[in-house]
Length: 151
Image (cartoon, rainbow, N blue to C red):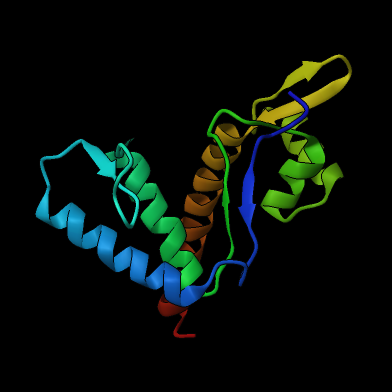
């Protein structure tokens, strides 16, 4: 899969005021209808059949709009998307050669497509969570050692 099928909204491309108003209206609706799993979306002036959206999709839209209201960009990527080694390295903020060492050592699973390595976004996120946990543990141990030594 060469195309990772990510959708990106750059910071500032959505009107922050409109996004903020939409977030408030959608959240109000969701709070008034907590049991509703399918959300009807009608045009501002009505007249057309309502579009029916899953509640989870509406919640994701609220998140995107809330980020836009704050002036931040957002990227939506499927959890099973496959990334090139360069894309994966960029997401981890490491060099491509370092990422390849992680792949070859078995720390991050990958598959070969011809001679090219592909990493799933999900595998990358799993690695990141485990790596973050290892770093926190090491920092805690270092902090405890510093207290023991009175540093």
